Amino acid sequence: GAVVSQHPSWVICKSGTSVKIECRSLDFQATTMFWYRQFPKQSLMLMATSNEGSKATYEQGVEKDKFLINHASLTLSTLTVTSAHPEDSSFYICSARDGTSNYGYTFGSGTRLTVV
Amino acid sequence: GQNIDQPTEMTATEGAIVQINCTYQTSGFNGLFWYQQHAGEAPTFLSYNVLDGLEEKGRFSSFLSRSKGYSYLLLKELQMKDSASYLCAVRGSTNTNAGKSTFGDGTTLTVKP
Image (cartoon, rainbow over the protein chains, first blue to last red):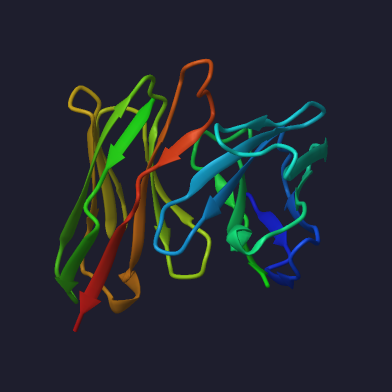
């Protein structure tokens, strides 16, 4: 089945630095990928929709200049958390759908970000 | 917009059957998903319903009634490893929501011996 690889699995960074998270579709092409954030014991909140070759679409309340998304190819989307703050500490998950399948989206393994 | 409701917590006994309900109000509908998520891990796909009725897949079944905005996930022969959070998600079909799934807050299921 469809596989989405997400790296890194966890990262600790200092306040004010930037962190890049990669999401790759390994055996299918994904023109659209989604980025979610999940705080402890809460559900997934959609941050943005990443579109290959065009600008990402951000959900209301998500700062596009803080969470930079690049979807440069059909198999890779990146999320960069810029000038990270402790309140950005969260579980970030990407997902993508194999266009040939009408079933569920495949999620990456997630990235646990801790900003100290 | 999308509004999805499911119980926060449920407890059941190993070997038993449990039904997790999900109700939704959406501006458009293009399918309902159920995902399982263990603590600290990403969600994994369980089921997808777009037409009314019951979809059975092994120990797990999912039901959908579009007219009632209602779905349930049925877990049979519960095992300890089924202890997890179960997320109901609805995919929109409007131009602004096409392809995007909105997740409920999840139901934490605890299976006891």
